[in-house]
Amino acid sequence: MGPSRSSLKFWAVIAALVTASVLRCAPLEANGGILNYRAVFKPCYGAKDAVKIALREFERNGSSRVLIVDTASFQTEEVDASTIDFNREVEKKVWRKTPFASALYRYTAGRDGLIHNDGIIRAEAATPGVFLTVDMCPSKRSFNRDLFASTIALPVKDRPIAIAVSGLWIERHRDEFNWIVEEARSNRLSVTWVNHSYSHPYRKGVPDEKNFLLSEGVDLDKEALGLEVLLLENGLLPSPFFRFPGLVSDRRALERLRALSLIPVGADAWLAKGRMPGPGSIILVHGNGNENRGIEKLINFYEEKKEDFKEGRLTLKPLKDAFAR
Image 1: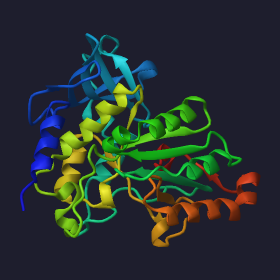
Image 2: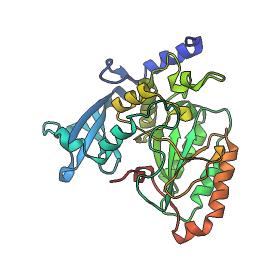
Image 3: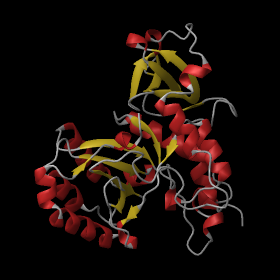
Image 4: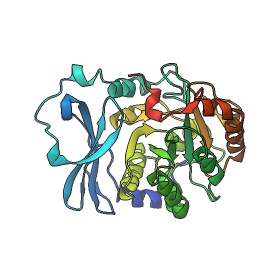
C-alpha cells in the first residue's frame, strides 16, 4: 500500500525543512533562521587534542555553524565553523577507536532477523544506576506531569532523564514542551534530548515489518534531521542518540542511522510491558498520556526504592554513562 494523500502532504512540508544525508541529496532550507542543514562526518581535534566529530553543518542567521560531538563524553555542542580546524587530519585508526565511534558501529551492526529493540538496552559496565528514558510520541492526550514531578522529587543528583521526543508531539503540545524545557533550564531536570523522529509514523493493524519507520514512503533521514532542526530552533541540543518508534528497525534502517551518526537506544525495562528494572537497566515509559500503566509502575518503583535512592545504593544516571569508556 502506498502513502496516503495526507502523508504525501506531510512529506512535502518536511522536504522544505531539512536535507537527507549529504551523501544522497543536496541541502534544503529550514525555517527559524536555520538553512542548509545537512549530515556530515568530519573528525577533528578540539582543545587538548580531544577528538571530536562534526556531525552536522548548517547556517544560522548568516553564520556557518557546526554540530559536533565529543567522542569521549558523547556531549554535543553547536559552534561557529570558523573555530574548527579541519585541516589537521585525524587518522581513522584514531577516531575509530574512540568510545563514540566504537558504540556507533557496534549498535548499528544489527542482529540477524531482529526487528525489535535493537541498539543499546542496558549499561555496558556494572553500575548501581538506572537510565530513565521517556518517549513522547504524537498524542492527543495531555502529558504525564506526575512522571516529571516524581522524578524531580527524587533525592538524586541532577535528576537526569532522556526524553525521546517526536516533532509532532512538540508541535501539538507547545505549552507542555515549554514546561519541560523550563524545568531543565531551571536545573530541576537534566535532559538529554533523544531523536524519536519527526512524525513517528504508525498505521494501526499493519505488521511491524511494514510499519513505523519501515513504512513505505517514509524517509528516515528526513525524519531524523527534521527533528534535530526543530530542537535547534528551540535552543536545544540534539544528542547523538536515536530511539526507533515502536522499537522497530531493520538492517537497512540501522545502516541509515550509522550514516547519520546516531546510536540506537532500546530498553530492557519497558515498564508497561511488565519488565521491571535492575541495576544498569534502560527504563522505557511513555510520558505522552498514552501509557498510564507504565507511569504508575515507575512511580511505584520510586516509592519502593526510596531508601535506596536516599542512601545512594540506587541512582538515576544520564544516558551517555551507559557506554563504557
